[in-house]
Amino acid sequence: MGNELPTRLFPHVFALNCGRGKPLGCRLLRVMPSEMICRCLLVEQDNHIVLVDSGFGQADVRARWRRLGCIGTAMSLRLCIEETAYSQIQSLGFDPNNVKHIVLTHLDFDHAGGISDFPDARVHVLAAELQAARQRKTISERLRYRTKQFAECLNWVPYDQLQPNSWFGFDSIKLEVGCDPPMRLIYLPGHTRGHCGVAIKFDDSWLLHVGDCYYSRGELCNANDSLALRTFQKFIHVDYRRARQTMRQLQMIVERHAHQVQLLCSHDPNEKIGSFDLKEQRTTE
Image (cartoon, rainbow, N blue to C red; front, side, top):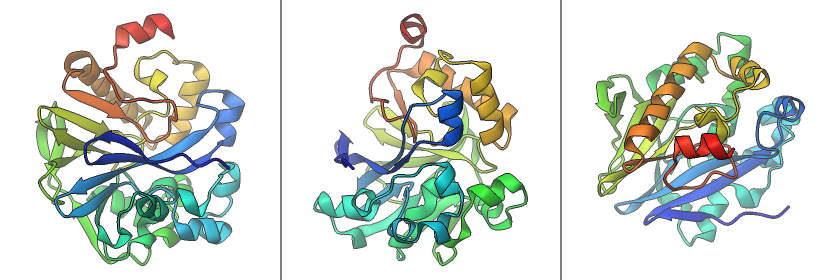
């Protein structure tokens, strides 16, 4: 397996691919990239490190069935120790013990597996998401939330007092992870009950990690709006209608504030940082 090196996106921000797979439904419906990655961000913050999502962890690699069950088979996961956040942090010359905060877009198994590799880190998440992951009320939630990944975490920092319309029309709250660069938790509902994005500020612009709001960049510009894609979205999103509404809001961000905000999702291996012209994409894809 060829491992991808961490990629520097901005000064003090690296993209890490912390796992990959070929989900069965995506292969059959042909609605997603042929291989999906688990993109996390490493942010150098003051004198410590902040992770945005944690991908799959070392225990997921070593005890896949116990940690993930049948979902690992359905995802055709290709996991290795070298692609865990812990190992990639070491490869960059950082000390994994310096990871003081993990900010989660949500607690799905492909985002939360690395939590156990950083037992001293404070784990920031929307309170509604933490509650959903603990209660696992539906069949979908029992599949997507693998409690063994985070059962031993004692350092939760749940957020429940969002500030309305405080970030380009989205509800958000300042993350207490340091102030250089500033970071905010952005409410992006639909995929899960407490799904969020994470915004990082650089001078006069922002990078927004949107988690699983979309799986390929083509969704953002409606280049792929097939019946197969909508069927997949209805299956994977807890609230399909709210997920579509969130997508429309993100499209407005791109159309009106492309010079200020750049988006990046969790799973599209071909997505690049850069200005995104919706009209141009619609004519070229």
